[in-house]
Structure formats: structure tokens, C-alpha cells
Image 1: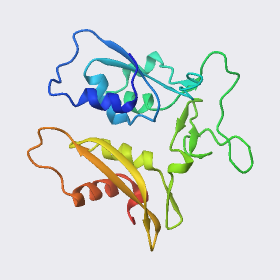
Image 2: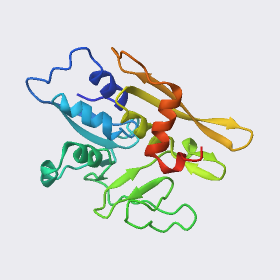
Image 3: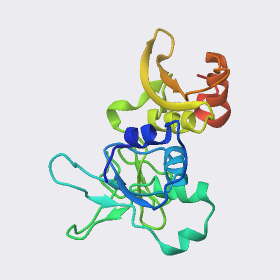
Image 4: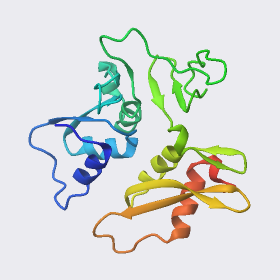
Length: 207
């Protein structure tokens, strides 16, 4: 079956969280899936494949091709690797991330950004955000996708969306919309969520 990351979130928030009797292959695309969502989905017995591209017009361009040796890694590490967009599929001559000013390839270090994407040393592409979604707060670029990924690691959070909010002093600040899991005896306060994000993401310490 196929489904966007939001569908995976819905699947993992059912009242019956019994693992599947037989594994189900599921392809996810359309948005960068948080590793926490992939972890929850696969813990239920789904086998997730992650692809990326202009799927509404041409299908996938890259796929997170799975390496057998990764099966020996801890589940959290497997989920982190699977959240990357991956390598080119058959039929494409190449995929690259380039500096938007120079047009030259960025370093293959998983850190150097080119239009908010990075290339890892093993040649796997990872989308960090979309240019239009980057939040510029006091001259600091903040990735909405990275904040969402942090929020998804909170044990009480079921879904999250982060957007820019106008601010007279900073220009923009992150604004998160958070949905909590069903059946919580006590929901976290707004301050609890903010403190959690600041602890997990260094760019938010001053936000």
C-alpha cells in the first residue's frame, strides 16, 4: 500500500496497537517522514519504503534503497536512515545537491546545505526542508521539518506541524500546532513542549 507520512501517523494512533500477523509493505512519500513516525510504523509490522519526487506528475526520482547490513542496526538508527530520501532510481543519470549561488556540489558530509538539502558521505540525499518553509528568526535559519521531527519524539505527541509566525523583534518565530495521542491521563503544557524542543534542538535555545 501507499500513504503519505500523515497516513502513517494515523495508522500508529489506533486503539489497537497489536502488531500485524503478517508484514505489510508500505511506500511513503509526499513529505519528509519523521524518523519517530517510521519507528512507530515499523514496530507494528509494516515494512516502510521511502521515496521522493514530483509524485503527482512523474513518480519517484529517488528512493531510500535499503542496505542489508542496516538490518543489524538498532531500530532507532534504522528509522533515522530510512527517513533520508535516498539515491536515484533506474532511469536517472544523476542526483545532486548544489549551492544555489555557485551551482557547485555541496560537500558530502550530511551537513552542508544546498537549497535546504544535504548529501551524505554514502551518496544518500536528505531533504532538510523546503525553501519557502524555512523560518528566518533574527537572521537564523530554522527548519520547520527539523522542529517537527523533534516534536514527534515527544512521547505524548501524535502529530505536529510547524509554521512561521510574524514577530516584531525577531521577524519570524516558529509556531507549532500539536496533536496529542489518545488516552493521555495528563497532557503536556505549552511550556513543557517548548522546553522539550529547546533541549533537543540547539537553534531554538534563544527562540
